[in-house]
Length: 350
Ligand code: NAD
Ligand code: ZN
Image 1 (cartoon, rainbow, N blue to C red):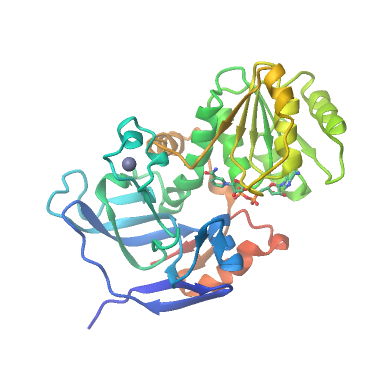
Image 2 (spheres, protein in one colour):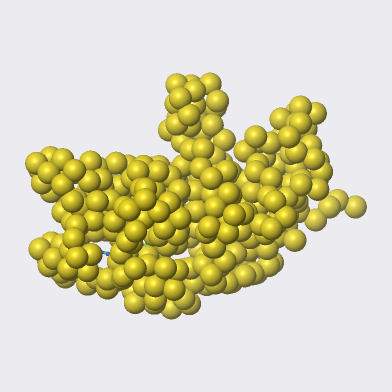
């Protein structure tokens, strides 16, 4: 009898179906995993609702899911670092390992990176999935498979904080308290930031941020002027933040990231909204505010894992909902329903 490999396939807009797919055999450098957990990311929901993100368009049915973890059930002949039974977190982007960017360690910029659930590449929301062994991170016993799946968004926060050069004493402004803003808050604190202020349009997200250790929170409105926004941030800090991370993608936030940051400070942009936004670039020029982009992460998975394993960062309060793979459609409905209070929806594959 063929083994059960229930798989969540995105056929088109608002059309996810659960179907059986063949279990793939690992290549020499890969491992076959019995999947543990897959978290739902904003991008998964975006593909479900819009069928595309920018130039990435779902043209053919695509298996969804990329924030994932599993247990090794079979290893390729070249694999020395993992064995059957190991629990691992899966870093979802496998780069070419040959190009300039790969060689200098900035493999997130590799043009040939194969990233899960980014059309036309299939994702990992299935019972069995094979992956490059060197992009699997063995979990210590005190780290759960759900936390392993959470390393994906946590790594975005780690990369953002590294790009911002956050260190002991940093005064950090984070714009947007979605999953990415919240993990950035946790990482910034663990890196020694002495004050972290976070904003959002939604009070319930700010309440979570407060519970997670934000020093102050700021409820924004859509109609605030730049001047008002800057003044409110500075009043709350009692000074000017030296690092700002935008995790909202909203134009008003990106403008605020530049305008509110202390002269000589750094504004890091993580949020991806409209492809073109109007920003006060000359203000940044005159005050030498560095504007830095963030694209996913590179060499951050182990750091993210160490933060969880050592107890410096606790992501468990962010996992608000759990579903079985059979309940995938309900899980996505929960994730996209703003009234559900969902932060991270976790799907359990076993
Ligand atoms: P999310 O949509 O759950 O969170 C965004 C939050 O920003 C929401 O809580 C929203 O209420 C808030 N917001 C919107 N407008 C605001 C404003 N004007 N001021 C303050 N807050 C505002 O998304 P997420 O999963 O947390 O991701 C955050 C952003 O990061 C998204 O744009 C996502 O596409 C992007 N992202 C980028 C990368 C990358 O590699 N650069 C990786 C992951 C996610
Ligand atoms: Zn490369």
